[in-house]
Image (tube, rainbow, N blue to C red):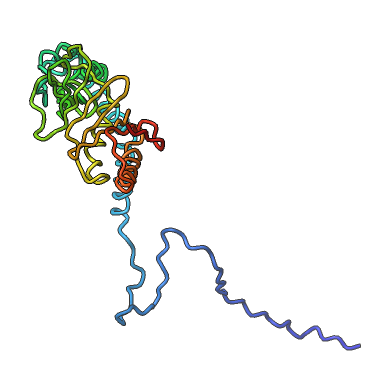
Length: 300
């Protein structure tokens, strides 16, 4: 075996410094990578542009300041507003300016203002707590008052608006003629409307303003005068009332009918018209027709 020890060992070449590229996450301070993205106008964006950190810090400081002010001062402002409202309410509650100091009466003609004010019991009370509904009920009991409405007029006035009963016709009793409204309330001796209905009663006692006559008789008379011409071709010239028999009517052509109360007036007039036709056809004469029983007329 031949061994060669005299040959030199091959020398290894020194390794060069190799560059190793490793990817690592970019830090916050690292500049943005250059990019060339075309803009809509065809220009290229600037590469690596940063915002000024000073401006960012000032903006963040402003936001924190505003949040701190809202957190600190909004409850204080709300509490101050609440105290102001409470103080204003307490002042208004105890202020003499907000007490009833004046009462106005509107619409009263036949009813005297003194009669109305005597029924008012809220003088000097607070405007907020004055019991207006109780006063309305008391004033509505006056005989000539049809309705009443009471309103607050700030700061210290109460207005009473009265609607009085309106004249409808006349009620003659015991030789005295009284003006009445459509519901039968006596309004005194004021003039009734021109051409209105007059009912003559055979009762003998006197009446005064605020009294109420038989409202069934008044309702019957109102319906008779409005419907008789259409049903019979004539009109009423006299209406009389008796507590025992109700309303009696005499027409311009000399017929007389006893109609009783106000129930079924239209039907009673229709029966009367039918009887009048048959009486004329059969040559039957009569002085009075009793229609109190509806479809069972009685001729006299």
